[in-house]
Length: 254
Image (cartoon, rainbow, N blue to C red; front, side, top):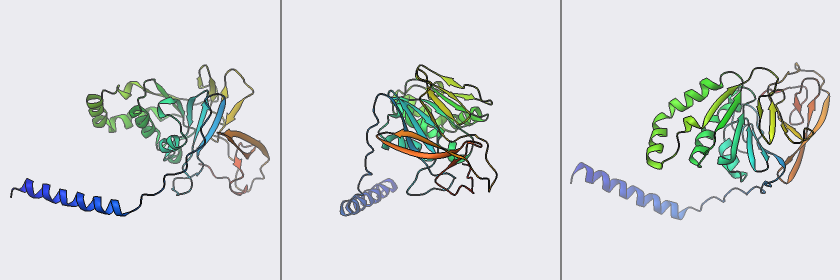
């Protein structure tokens, strides 16, 4: 028997054994589905609330989705953001803009994979990645790293070139960095307001002034719609530090 025949027979035997094992083992139950996000109104979906670069099984890394009349704006791209969007029932191709609050790995690590996943989900419009300086180099590096895969999928699947669907937009000050017919955004906070109604806004933790350890915080209440649920947290009115999930005497950036 030829070498190719031996390899083919071995592969077939392995696949049969694997199939037998797979048939005998019960499949894990799918994760519970999230309540659908309404297609109208302004809704903040917390995709990940675990700060820091380490991973946990019960909480995902920092990421939020602001959904305004069905359009998705992503704030931070921690590990798992693409899957969390899918689990939340949000269309990846509906992402219009991405905001990176600061360049810690737990906030920016999956920005490129989010672009890739949206592209493979038939993204047709341009996405702006709004972030502090460094975003342009990160985006160029990611696209260069995946050049082979991109070229193959363009040729085989007829997808548009993602290099024309992504744009890095860097900001350095506190002024407005984004505006469309639905929202406008500025980096301090980070705050995203709905354009037609300046009184309706959602703020997420981002680049901010941090109190030194031991500082007594002066919290103020904050709440946001999470799909059909409402959650609340507190935030220091002096340093803009978020509290409630950890001791106030230990400000935790990230």
